[in-house]
Image 1 (cartoon, one colour):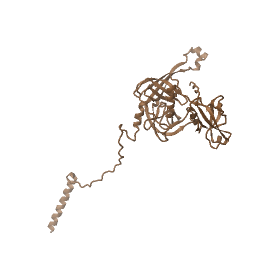
Image 2 (cartoon, one colour):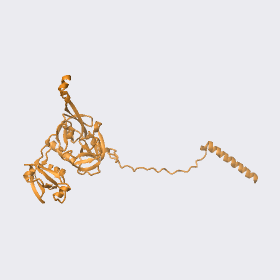
Image 3 (cartoon, rainbow, N blue to C red):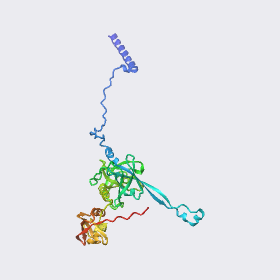
Image 4 (cartoon, helix red, strand yellow):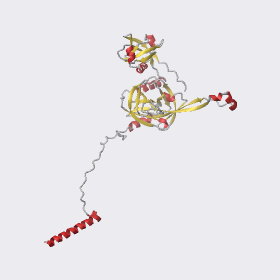
Length: 389
């Protein structure tokens, strides 16, 4: 028995020694004893919905960009300006030693803006300040072609102008609805900022109906945080489907660059101006010949008004439509043609929308009593030209 136990112990020792040698120098000879590991749990996004024909993804605005950018143009303008010579050159002592110098120098000043094609037969909408006093206007199409453009008409009151180029079959933008906009809606601004080339920026509608900015006579701006920079003026503001909802016009900035406060003219206003200019070459607005002032709470208290709605008639033009109708300074204008007046910008827009020669009613508050007068709407005079800079 002792002999058998000794033989077993020796065999086990040899087997352990062989196993050690094999596992050290040739472990691949041994069968694997590792247990199968569970699969790694990866975070996988949900499968995207079936793509549209263009292959766009829902998180991309590529389709809107593709829809709108073929209608966006670059507008280059130039004009001749006189650069006056230094007054010292006219000093008799200076002229005695240095003689007569060259007269005032004429130079070409150039500027850059953007525009949007609104019809396939060559009409382009842009800002009036982009083409103001330009001697020559050149439009660069998205395909690189450059065409000379002429001004069909402009409207300084809204800072809009209509150009036309001699071309057919252009890609016209699709008009959207600015009246359906909501604060928070996604918008895109397209243009040529600083001349770097066509650029798209995105943002949201920050506010609607902005006024009192002293940019234009008639203000009803869309405010957006989509980056708008010099060179974007006149370019389109489009919605998430690439439809035109505004014309980029101005920014609020202390440095000249975008800080996220930009303003666009609503497409409803732009369309009205465009149609009138194309049809008649000018824009005609209603006018009643009054100077008004918005009602603050202090004014409402002094006039013993129940609420600060309407506007104060601060002045009446002698012989004007309102004067002939019997309107007097100090009257409170509450409604025009049945439409309630809620402030000076609103009153200007309501009156401007009336056709010259038409009859409308004015609801006034006079000495604590309501008075209704009938007025014949006049034609708004053209604003005086801007002084040369």
